Image 1 (cartoon, helix red, strand yellow):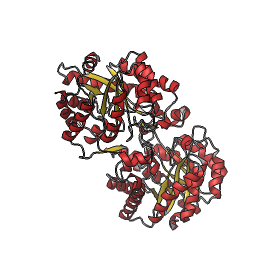
Image 2: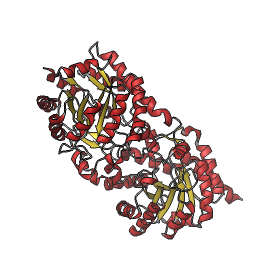
Image 3: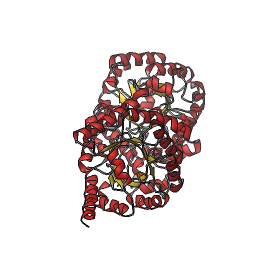
Image 4: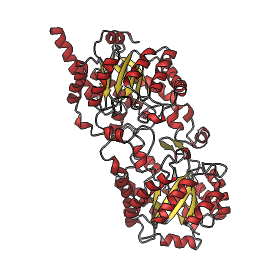
Length: 319
Length: 303
């Protein structure tokens, strides 16, 4: 892993993640096609730069749910995709993944933070993140996630982050492919209304499984702040690995026609940056060290979190 | 206003011009279509309907592709999860937007038709994804959902239902039975493959035999390239006793948007449509990728 990050992680110092990419790009008016990576790569890079300026030490590639299935699923089959689909759809994913890493790397260079900040390649569920019933079995997940992980490895990301994983099988697949391509991996689970994985599989069991496969940190994400807080208490008792969380704020507002996960959250104003930072500080009080923001959060949320964590550090030093 | 004038034309063997694409036309005008723009930019949507009316369309279709409660709910694990993280209005959103889509089309007619008879078709597709018959719900469930949808568009004043981009006989039959039980005129339009078959592999003959006894008012083919539509139309015309029609797409599906190409400019599009009129089709219009200029070109078919 990125050496300064690994040091901080293992000494249990706080590590600040960035906030949302998708929902923030959409909020800023970027049309959600190809994750904005073909049409608005400059704005993707700009948002990474803003997160770095806000104090993020890990920036995540804008690749959530970016995989060949999201394109293939809206056709009858592969032959139909070739017949009526735009040219190049079959080879599009690796290109977009490379573009996403380059946008993050350029942002980090522009911010002059090559040493301080790490780039995490985001692997997400292959099917809709909120539909564990559609999730592939382990073998299929492993071979498809491996294709994505290889591209991230070639592009030399510092680590992989398995994000919003909703089944144990797919989380295991992500942990395994990271090992196969030689990259460190953090695993983050999406939490359902029951306080376990969205699949209802027990969080503690999921953590044990990915820990066995070499995950270097475990996280929980994409649930409201209160649920993330409760899940973190379970994580704490289930692992000795560094752990953390990033909550979403507001309400998921899907598109009125269907195309995969669409990053649009409404009513986010109920969680202004200071309120979110205060909530995340409570998670830190309980022992979480990796903190950031999921859907709905903005650079202002990360800046507030950074200020809150910084005040802690100063306070600790003077005490 | 009602369906009567259109039905009369078809009965007399006259041409009926359908409008062109609305979703891709929104994209072509540089606006995202993720939320249909029915609530956020109603005048813009209405303006496109007006452009199609001025281009000569006899039937305009609502901006409501895939707009249903199921499409919104599919983004969540289940009801508990939707209540946990979903926007508060999701239970009513689809019905409200559906009604708005009909109202906007009716308003466009009031502003642009100038007394010419123009019918408003509520455009309703499959409950699951239009190209994926494997995902279709069972008929009894489909009927419950179609009943809710059709009641909304009927109450909002739609003149007919245009069931479009259908992919199976079983879902088409379920929807058609519901439309007829509500007293709504109903056209059914299917996507077809290069062999001229439905996406389930079912034949035009099987489909016609299933739907004509239920009282389908017209059968069309749509959302495939002109070549595939041509193959399907030959089969359809050989079987159907009711009026038939077609509205192909042009360009390429570039999910979640559309890739526009210059393969079928309006003059060439007219040639294709004219050959279908020659074969016996009487309802012609445009699917994804077509524009008001394509529909204006179809005016020549009336001669």
